[in-house]
Length: 193
Image (cartoon, rainbow, N blue to C red; front, side, top):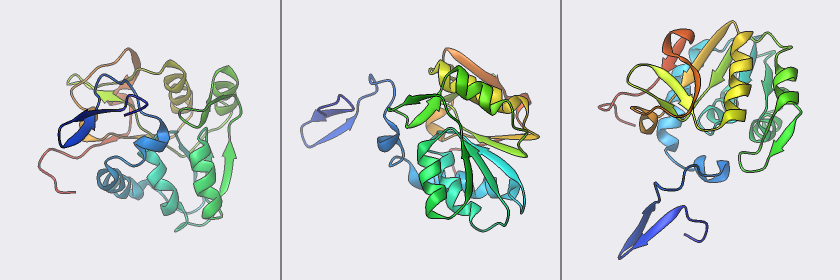
């Protein structure tokens, strides 16, 4: 409440929808069952000796423990959270340099984008803040969107994981259209978590 994330009411509190974007430390605690289920579905893209990119999203962070089940994985990321999770699982990890975004605990900016353009990853796992009914995947964060776009350019496959709360919206910065990704993984409204 002190930071504006919650609105107190008699008998409880609710998330303040007027607050645009929670910090990563808070986001990674929300919708955890759905995020894990999305990552389980994305697991079929993992295999031994592959290179993958995981973005700085709280959703894709749930993929990192799964990587330990495979041999020879090279993880590339701009996320400090992913780096720390990779360390816990003794995974090879390359982290992009650039401007540090404390709020999202990641690197962004021209240096990050240029660094990541040098890699040709087998699979890029990404998330974003919204998908419209027309299939436009978008975000309100220009630097994060630029990083994701740069990775998509040289990725053999792009898999985008989106929670139900991100559907039916279009934000300012377009990441891509649905057809530009190999797969969009979402749960439909009737699926149990």
